[in-house]
Image 1 (cartoon, rainbow, N blue to C red):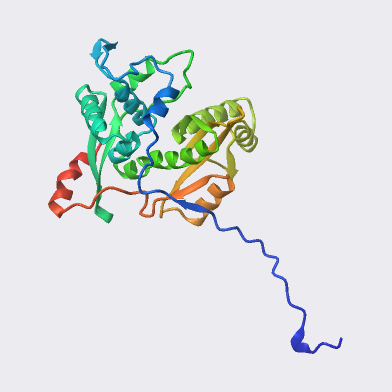
Image 2 (cartoon, rainbow, N blue to C red):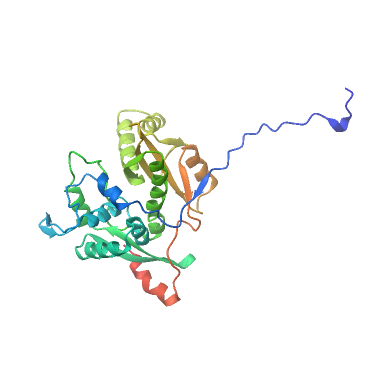
Length: 304
């Protein structure tokens, strides 16, 4: 009662504010893992050549002659829908061997390489995708005793999605480096296509059993370790299946954020607990074309 009117009690703002989502800057280049370390792990579970010498392999009436490093390159590329050639080269660590391996895989019809461009930003990059024959070779030579059930991909994605879909390798390697420092290792890479296929099949099965959509969606989310935001299942770009030093198994969900994301997108992804990364320019990378004629030359190669 002794306080003057000008010194009234301050009002406390109790409005809940959504915390600003944390987005990590994606490295400009892939940090290469030591190839001997990968070769000693041989975690890919394939009955294909592992050594430095080429060996004869037959599949679907065709004969191939790959060596161990070529099988590694083919398997790494097949884990993603499309990959930047430069990222695969950095990941290999040995640029000279990579060049020879890539040329051999292309000559054997197991990998295709194209040049794509993003006119808005005048960015040009070489990308690779595994062919159907390359995917079949991997699928038909799984080791039943060691297979991690890794899903492989082949063919080209839509031109407008190439830049985004070619970036996950860098994102995965960046997180994988952190995990390895903790004594953990990535057992399997799961893309959103695989997650969506499993989830939507389970959702339709629940609906066919008479479950209301809302409860069916929640049941699928709980079973698949997914998040529901505004009555929609939220999927990461990549899910890593990880085994920790003590044998504990867990998943780490990753999302590549582009400048097209609005706050609703970010809040849904952040609420799901995703680790979010941004490469600055919409997920693009590569070189700048020297002239407009160069851009026009590579444009026809952008179509699938």
